[in-house]
Structures are given as structure tokens and as C-alpha cells.
Length: 150
Image (cartoon, rainbow, N blue to C red; front, side, top):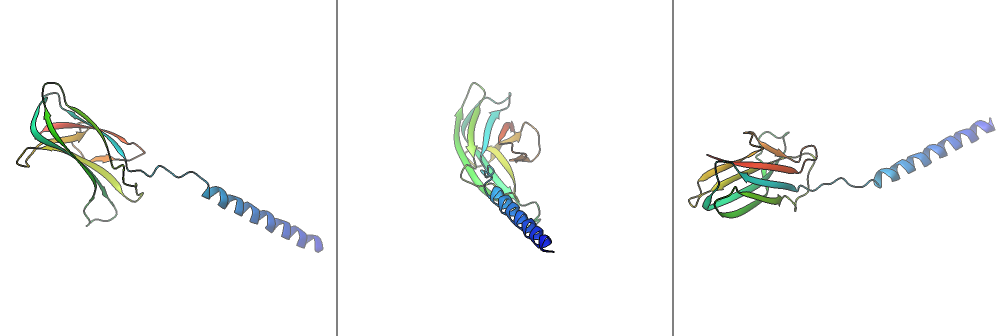
């Protein structure tokens, strides 16, 4: 009977050491990249090569898809004055670099050009497709937004 007690004690010690080891390993794993930074390239369509006294606006929004009645939250906005002519327009920037990515949120971009009166004249579509410009999905932090006339 004495050997059974010793066997139980050794078994519990081994299990305890194994649990302590596993807990220690789980805390030492490197953190995931939690940055909400998106590398944005804005490009004019082939038919549009000039802008005069207009403003480019790039906005990053975050929203929780599990909450239906709550609007998206503006994470960051970038504004750039445009006076460009002749060759195709290309503008590269980073947005969301001061924000931390939250797992429960989904993210999307809006890109558009406004004239001096505030009227939208061009809208940016992700890869030229007319759909919501979702970003930061599957670890993808690069996006191409193509401006098209409204």
C-alpha cells in the first residue's frame, strides 16, 4: 500500500510541474502584431490625370459586426490638398499607425476627393471593385484604392 501512495505523489508532482511549464510557455509567446496600420496606395483611373484645388480624404473606420445598431467609429483621417496635372496620380501613405487592432472589430477604408464646395467628385474603390473596402483581414495590410469619377 505504501508504494501506491508514493506513486500517487509522484504522479501529482509530475502533473503539477507539467502544468506550471505549460502556463509559463503560454505567457512567453511573442505578442501578435496588434497594429491597425494599413499601407494605402491611391491611384487615379486611367481617364483622370489632373486635379485642381481639390482635397483627398482617406478615412479608416472600425465597427463591431455583432452590434447592429451602432455606427462605425472613425479611427483616423488623412487629408491632402491636390493640385496635380499631366501624368497619372499616385499617392502612398499609412493610416491607423496610432491605433491598436481589436479582434472583435472589422475595419474598412473610405477614399474620396472633394472640391472647394465640399462636393465629392471622385470615390476610391478597393482594387477598382465597387464594394466595401475591408482591410486588415487575414493579416493583409496593403490596399490599392482606384479613384473613379462620380
